[in-house]
Image (cartoon, rainbow, N blue to C red):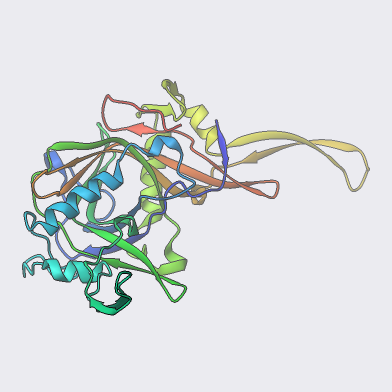
Amino acid sequence: MKQLQIVGIASIFLLVACNLGNEKKGNNNRANLLLPKTILVNQEFMSENTTIPAWQKNFNFSNFIEDVFDNVLNSTLSVFDPLSDDSTGKKCQVNEILSKMGQTKDTLIVTDEATEEKVYIQPKDTFLLKEIKSLYFEEEWSMDTSEPFVFEKNIISWCPVRYYTTENKTFKSLIFKISKGNPAQILAKNIIYEVDLTDILQTGNLKNLNVSKLVSLIYNKAISGKAKLYDPMNVDKELSVTQVRQTLGERTDTVYVDDPETGESVQKIVKTIINPKEIESLVFVEDWYYDSKTFAIKKVVKGIAPVRHYYKMEDKMKTIPFVIFTGNEKINIF
């Protein structure tokens, strides 16, 4: 199994909150096993990351953002205040969006090269679309490990996120929100990215998500012998439960130690058991769809893979023990 030095596959930040509703049901009346309540997840998908391997770049981010802004600024697409409740329907006006993108209307004093006289101008300001570096999603997660395995994400809304620098400090801002539509047109296939599950201590964003339960559900499914698990580098290769246990860290070693009483070398058997806490992130394989009129987005989860973080000597390593797919289509992670 391929091992990787620890690097960020994608910069993802999660904000999780529980809706005090009834038990969430997915498609086909399947129960959500993550929690007995709806799980709302705010996830930031970064467009620029130098550590992202080539297999993650199936999404032409810049073209998509350019299309969205063209429609917004031409007033052919209605968008909403990112901080407002959807029920209020507070639309963002073009001038508000331009202001959020850093456009100003300051009058400048310049010198006319021909007459050398000072003239006052109010230039048409431009802004940099390259400052939009991520998409911020509000989505619902649901999971059912019965056959067939299901992991669903229901996108409630998404926002473009602007990153900009002022006085040597970097800030980010949500520009507007898009929430409604019928995403039926393919936007990108096989988007692969990693979600960090250990963000609790840094931001508290995962405090309402039962991470250990999520990991246990996937782990128990893997070792049950009832799931088809595949090598992430070669999905034509199906893995046995024994192979999966080994890649999850289970091993038996024979070691020789000196007996303190006799000084003789004694053989001992050392067993290393699986530590679920080593699963610190998840990799998702998804197809994204969009509505060409409203630019609403839909994510279809095709595969999910746990990422094991562990130490080998003094180096922290990462490995993907297996990938499990939700349908017949399979794609190599590497």
